[in-house]
Length: 234
Picture 1 (tube, rainbow, N blue to C red):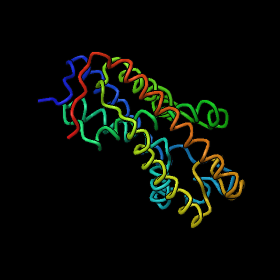
Picture 2 (picture 1 turned 45 degrees about the horizontal axis):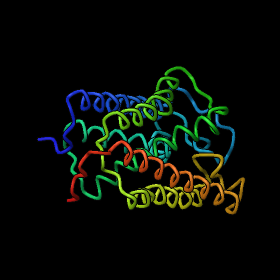
Picture 3 (picture 1 turned 90 degrees about the horizontal axis):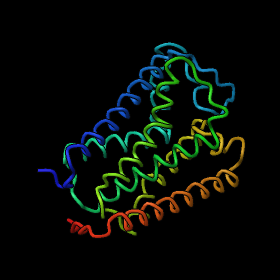
Picture 4 (picture 1 turned 60 degrees about the vertical axis):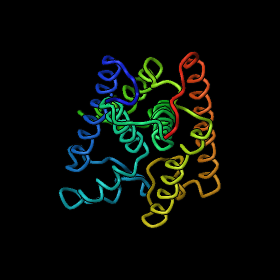
């Protein structure tokens, strides 16, 4: 019995969005692992510069793939929306946090790509497909399906801040791994070029953006939830 009280149409819409996310993630993983389009990276502090060609470089390429915020946010959305579509979620603090996280992180993914990264993206062939889904379609559909179907009255003020745990852990991992291998997933985090001071200022800006987005989603949820009974926390 679904715990969200969602209609069949809602669950289908969530399932389609999740399916698109899983498809793009799988396609991107295959293209990356097998170096279908060899890296053209020229910066020695960017992912892909030191990975060996052919199958020998596959482990490094897969680890790099899993280390991108884009991939993490798309995985989180795919997991969340798959669970919602199947009626497997309940209004616990964990699921409320993951719901907020999925909204904030995928929105940050879309905005940062469009505003900062898109102009330098070097895409080939099927990369246009995975890139379009991961950076455009999934962010838009995730927010749109939430606006239309919710589930309503799930978000809390506390989830704005508990939703920062995963991004902060990702940042800690990114800087720790970067210190070991001398490579970073995004130029605005590249300590080798920017230094820790500028990189941390950029991080602070993104975290503030995340908090602002969380407050916006919370405000919209409260507005759209008028007349809807809030499910008790479990």
